[in-house]
Structures are given as C-alpha cells and as structure tokens.
Length: 247
Length: 310
Image 1 (cartoon, chains in turn purple, red):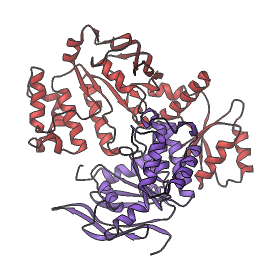
Image 2 (image 1 turned 120 degrees about the vertical axis):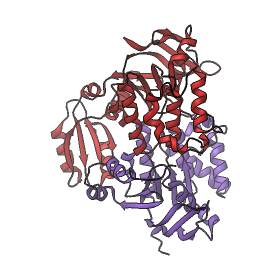
Image 3 (image 1 turned 90 degrees about the horizontal axis):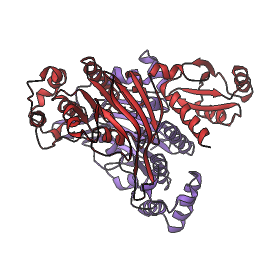
Image 4 (image 1 turned 30 degrees about the vertical axis):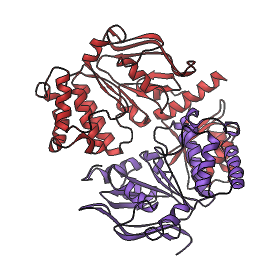
C-alpha cells in the first residue's frame, strides 16, 4: 500500500438486514489532506465512519486505513487513528491533566511521554495553568480545542472529527480550524464531518453522500463550478434535496 | 404591542451564584414577530427560554409574555404558549398519533379542532402515525415535536434550537415551515447557533456570555457595520490568513468559506492593504469590498465588547 494514501476504500458496503446503509463507496484520502465528509442526516456518514475507525465491520468491499485492512486488523487501525466528536470527548468529572493521563494511557504512551506531551499540549493551547481545573468548568470552546489536542496526542496518522464544531462560537470555531490546519501541516490526515457549509470550504476535498452513495467528490472550487453556484451550501442543497431516506 | 417584554433579567447558578447565565437582559418582541435569539452554546439562550416559559425563576428583573407576568401568572402563560425544548422531550414509547393526541388532551382540545394549523406538517408524518416516536428519524422527530407544540393553537411559540444538528436541507425546510406559521399570526421566538439563519427572522438579538450584544433587524444590523470590509481570495488561503494576522494595519481577519474578511485599523485602507499584498509575496489575490454578514457583525461586536472590558 502506498504510504501517501491514508484511507483507501473499494466498494465498501454495509447492510443491516435488507437496508443498505453504505452502498459500494470507493474513494481515497491522501496523507496530510483535510477531507470533508458531508451528507444529509441518515445518508450513511456515521456508519461509514464507524467502519473506517474499526468499530464496525463491512458487509462487503474493503477499506485500508493507515495501512491496515479494517476488517482484518481493526485494533491496529484503532491504535493508529484519533477520534473526536462533539458528543463524546472528555470526561467532565476529571481534571484536565487526568483526562490527558487517561487518554495517553489508553494509547499506550509511557508515563514520561504522557507528561512531556501533556505539558507541550497545554503550552500550545495557552492554558498551562489549567491542568488541575475540572473539565466541566472549562468554557465550551476550550473543551473542544483540548479534546482535539488530546485526540492527536499519540500522533496518529489520521484524525476522525465527527461534527467537532457544533454550537461552538464563531471565534472558537475558526481557532479550531487553525488547529486542524496545523495538524495537517504536520502530516496528520483529517477526516471531518460538519453541518456548517462554510467549513466545507476549508477542506482540500469534499465528498457528499446521498442515500448511502457518494454522489460527488472534488475540491470545493471544482464542485461549485460543476454545480454552477458560488456556495457549497447550494451544492449540498442541490444534491441532498433529492435524498429519499431520512435518518 | 409587545408579545414579550423582558426587563433587567439576570440569572446566576452555582453554590455562590458565581456563574452568570444572564446579566441585565432587556428585550422586547413585537406581536406577530419572527424573532431570533442568535448565539453559541453556553450564551444563555436556554436559560432565557426557561424563564419565559415559567419553568425557572429569574434572580432579578421581570418578564411578561402576552401581558402576563412570568411569576404571578404562570398558569395562564402555560396555557397559551407552545414550547419546544432543545432536547427531544416527547414520549419515545408512544406512537406518533398517541403523542399528538396526548398533548391535545392535555390542553383540553383535539387534533381535529386545530387541524388546519398542523395539516402541512402532519401530512408528512401521517405515513408513520403508528410508529413509536423513539424510532423516528431526526427530521421527523422535530416535525412531530412542532406538531405537539402547535396542537393547542398557542398564541406564541418558543422554539429552543430546533435546527441544531439538523442537516442543511432539513434546516431550510424547517424555516419555511416557521415562515408559514408566522403568516398565520403566531409570534415566534426561536433560538439558533447558526448565524446564517438570522436573515430568516424579522428581528434578532445577538447573545454571548450572558449579554445581549445587539437587537436589530438583520438588515439594520448589517447596515450598521461601522467600517469597510474587504474580501480576499487566493489559491493559498491558510498562509494568507497567517500573514494577515501578523499585519499590524489589520484590525481583524476571519475566514468565511472561501474568503478572508478583513477589517483595517482606523486610518488605514485600500492603499495600505494593496501595498502590503504586493510586498508580501502572495500572488493573484482577489480583493473587493463586501457586504458584511450577520456573523461579521457578531464578531465585530464581540471585539468591541472585549475592548470596553479591557
């Protein structure tokens, strides 16, 4: 497998009974790329993402993630990726440093390494004095940035971001995207889902899922040209309004 | 006449009342308005909704809904408002039809009596009327919740973040539904974290950190933006952003989709920006004056507030 490709799928399919949630999707994501994964509610995004994270096995087709076949080596996949969503991120009733230690431990980093990277992480976020603060007491924006930084603490090849900025204020949302750009600069591939169409513009390439299939995939610029509009919102609307199924 | 009048409402949480959820909020919503409360999570939106729907008491100040006091006349208010909380709160193990008839009965009415009001929405739900509410899709749940909120023909609707987590297509449909209901004469007070939805409202209040930043019509707000705003586009957007942030003549720069929105410092303008661009090594940067969006105004007001605080 080519090292410059982070994710590669061929006819990836997931069926639940007679329902095909993910329907023969084939795509690849380059290393260091920021890849937007869009779709209406129920289009199959979450199911596809679960397969790519090694949490669910495909019914047919294959997917290579970080160099490993997800069906055969799901645990190796899990070790080499990071995951963050708005809903499941940090433990509110643990301190900042406890969360860092916990996740560092999960990913098998040594104590020394956890301490070093934890320190570095807090410095980078400009919150060196908050190590002993309970996560529940942090403003939402800080929490999101902290959750992101922790999810890449083990230096994964790929980070999966599931609606990471929902409800976040406009300033923090933009700061959050800078973190994604910085990570991409360091070679980490970002796989992002979002409902904010302006954020689709921040991606190098975007795939749009409709009813289990990828209906469009390209750079935002070329997608807008193809659909003869000047906003990704309109591209999405044109594709997704014909969706037959709900969530 | 105002449907909602809020005077100096404050609310604090925590053992020592150390967490400020709302501070000195003053707000009027004219009758028949489609009024948007726009702000991110944690701004205080839900607290304000709970105070207005008589589910929570303010620590200071007074509020009236349709002329009734939220403390003294809470029973009356509960009869005439429709409230859709941010969290799905219907009975998951009852069917669509059972939920709807339950809420109708609660308000001493029937589905039939006000069917004209919910008809447009209910016909979309009807094929699933025997399905349990818990098994509905996100968009369908939201439609059912709206039906249950409407079934007693409320005079005013309180909708707390009805479009959060909903995809762009369903969001658009939902706002079209709200517009139709508003035309029937129902006052609507709705909150959202999505700034782009602000333009669907007659009037909006921007809220952040327990404070109302501005109350205006969307057009009025955008027209009141105090400075010239430049839109910059190039092939290499991220390096351009980093350099613009370092430029001492730039007051603020924020990315909006495929464009950076740049505001220059007082006394600096087009020539300074053009000169900097030609020296900075960024090539083929497209630059033009743009009309500010609601989000530009929000970001600008936040900056102003920070300055006042400092």
